[in-house]
Length: 309
Image (tube, rainbow, N blue to C red; front, side):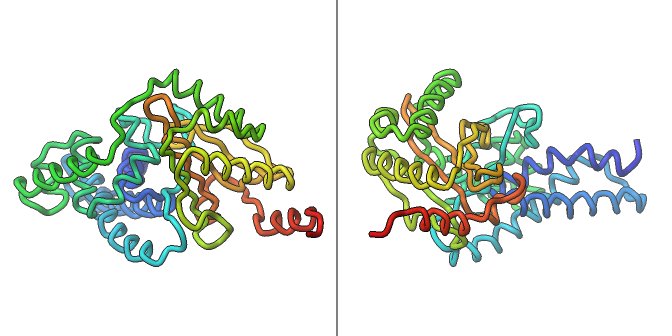
């Protein structure tokens, strides 16, 4: 196997780490590309590398920590609520398929990780998701083993305090998602309300590029009414929903009449109810999914179709 082939085989694992660290497909791909280049140059230069996977994981994690620090500064001036970039997953095609704990890919989990410092996030993911020993974690993040254990412990405590306690089986989640998206497609307000948790949250990310929720909406009735209003607006411009798997969980793409992507919706199901609905319409976060719709043009069409007054 050539150095190039050896390096390329490590891409999925590198992406799995980078995406969970950053919550961004584009930023993760940049980090992975730079890391693979450095590994390839080292191998081609004759550098003695006992374990290329370990070498690459170290580079990816360190670059991701640096990138996350910069990203935190950018997110302080982000317009509206920041949500992770959606990753459409299909099992075998999942770039993170080698990772055994699927829940670590969920949008809800990535949102929880935003409360951690870059070093906490790295130590927590390396230990809890990728099962690295503490001595390796310490080497990767440049801390002592004792400090690494402390970082993981504090991060685990923060995540556990905020993580929902009631799980739902995959079969139950799929059935609930089927009913939810059917109700969404029909604009069935009563059907929507019956599926939502009492304290459900609705979150939107337009990044200031296209209209989106200015702030999260909470409560079963308010969330159902808001979603129903979205459906009515979408119907006027011929938009449709296509069911997809978003970060390993049920979701849907909104598509314009030409099949171009308007946005992506994901749902979080806990305890037999929908706990959160998250919608990403920021075009900067959707380019990796295919051709994008011109949302502002669609809105002009909708306004033109509405009767005066």
